[in-house]
Image 1 (tube, rainbow, N blue to C red):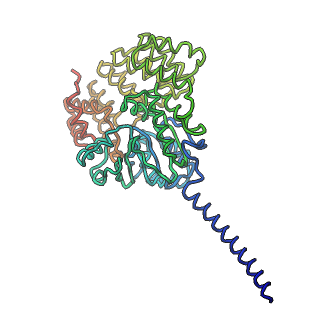
Image 2: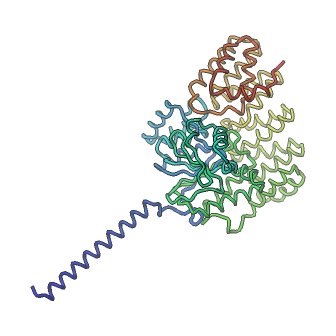
Image 3: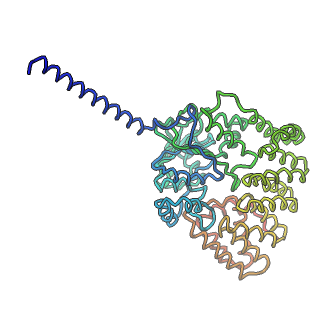
Length: 505
């Protein structure tokens, strides 16, 4: 073969090798790009196609399961950590459901009752143990987490939110965040000012209860607090696998008239790029104005402001709830009931407005008026848990034991045998039915023993639990009282609450 022909062949082969090399390099770049999440939309720049709104925060877990999320980094923007443990037996059952991809059973398992396997207080723990989440960034609205000056102060803060001593030992302040692990789950606690930059794709989960707390912490309006969060998210440019916003009315975490804040965040996430930097919708400003009047106890100004708006937006739930609140403040319970009922009929999610107003009437001592609001809300949305305990306790203190029993028995299938049966037993004891009372007390303690590993928080009814123990002891059922006092998970209630309890005469 001549020299010029050899050179031509070698040149062709070199070109082929170069082409193959470039092709392999191109494919490698695509692989690396995908591995680092370049295919995911950027929060603050892109429209998020995968964003959901849920009623309870724990509802997001089923969405994560449905999407097949595994080993994700979670940014949890919330006033609560939601990382209490789940009982080992319940985790085993959840693993079976998760492996079988039984979405319906997984959704059904989300409950506070005794058949439930997880709830809003522990769903992040469950997500981590099922392999959905590998690391958690909890963004809290409270600035004191970034001001822990020493380890003693840091430990006090973490003890106050319910973490164990063994977990607390590994936490350290690093770059404005508290880093450590809870139950073996890597956790970084940050404030909105110290939110980290994360290059890997993330899940963003936002609880509406974050925003009123942020507003109070910084002394700013609620809309400004929402815009502050959105501005921070925009600046961080997170790559988002999935995003969610939760109302969290159930259990009283978010009060109903603050629900519009959840809509603000949801609409911003679904838009092309996250506000601010764009024109603020007029309705958002209207909600903020109504909130200012409501918070200032200016019912006449609230009603005058809302009346023309309601002519144009007659079914808007947040305007209707602010109107109901204003009429309550004006002592027009008929009108307050009318507006709150209308919202509830339109959407059961907004039935929380009825007991929300009933609670204020209850605190004024107007039990009959309060009961009307509670009963209507319960009837239209039987599954909600929203301060019905207070209604039951008020009836008990008024000596109307059958009415108190009515509320306890309704709450039992929703909130569990403990503490419902403890209070049912207390009513039987006050009616001098000692044997029935003893039976219910033992049933309550047995139910508690089966869930003691779950970190359930009973502080909202702590005074009543401590008071029930006093009455059991006073009426000769000292063994039941002793079992309650010896229950490790309740001891703090007896230390903190017993001094404030006023027993019945």
